[in-house]
Image (cartoon, rainbow over all chains, first blue to last red; front, side, top):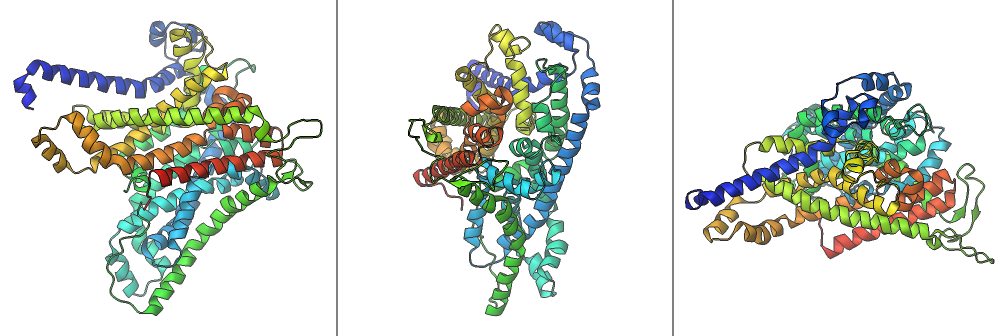
Length: 283
Length: 309
């Protein structure tokens, strides 16, 4: 603050430079997304216009009506929702059992189990692709959303266990002790005593796992042929001919699958930052 | 993350209760362990197993053992069949490593700058913090399509506007840089979030003391912030590098699966495995990728003494 009185010119110059930096950062982060939104609201013919005219061209929702009328996209949304919700619910349920055990119980081999779970979470997906492909075919789950729910557990389970364990550990021990003294079983304790306290953690973890499952591409591309999830539909979105890229519709489809995520992320902003860092940065 | 919990001091219990608790813990862990064994352990074992066979994806039961022939094998006519003899594989390795090193370095630098800016007090700080979450929330496939459009030589703001109609993605040598730019845009905010969380946990009294001693902000950054941030930064770096080494989505969407095989290790393995139905060969490549990534983890953990506990 003393710079303000000592050398006001330098002070204001510094502040100005700082705000320029802020603007540059904001522009960098938001401009590509803004341009995609704008393109989704323009008629296909307007895509040839120069940027200034493009920005002021007439707004139309035709891309959105076409995207929603596309049966592939409709089914993609449904499959994505089923697959993401299914794998997240399974992971939260069995992940919270594991997190309770790892966060609250003392037993031999705990360290090893923690390392195995961490190792699986950094697993390259490709390392299991051929094994999973033959497993999926043997089980008759190829092109079936159940197959995707099953395979997505490879990244949703380690993530939920890892993050929930750090939350469980922070719950005061007295709650659980009281339940134990009253003769409650571990499952009763978990469901009736810890779950209510863990609600914010479960929501955050579930949300982050949902985003991962919603965005997954490699497994969805490999284990399905027609029952595609939205990332694969968007990646292969084609127009009337193979060589005609309907950019307006692609952008509209992209915005449709992104907006729910952005709303969720903004609503749960604080929880997400704590959830992300719970897993990674506790030095 | 702490692996050993700072266990609350419990009253001394009998050994019987401890043993019962340990048994209960195993039951609680069982569903998770079974799931991990089914979707990770068994498939990994199968991948390693298939890597030693010549087999077709559609008929995995008709396989013949060829040892390490998928890795390295030259026929009597001098035809090289192992993937380690395929220049395209080494091109994919080179491109993936380039992609990882450059994008993770840039993400760390930009992430640090953004985190330092957001960590200081100014009007509109909350808004910028919110804006940070936008690229992170966008699915990778979507951001790849957004940038494909920006790079497009007839419509794109960058391809047509800045570069005057150059097809940036047509040539894999120039495309890799365009892809790095996409990854940096998409994940810088993730880095910034992690670094910001680290910054906010730093004790403020040290900075007050440094101010008293007349240390400049520049000196404070290099002498205080960076060393204190080291653990958080290294963990973020490890996770991001491992993520970047697995990259496939961006290549597949922006270049197509054929060119993705020349630019991403995963793309190369997937093409062999799925598009060419070479179950044994593709599995061998997957094993190699697994080994490369595990070696890098070990290097990181030992060289920087990264601790996860």
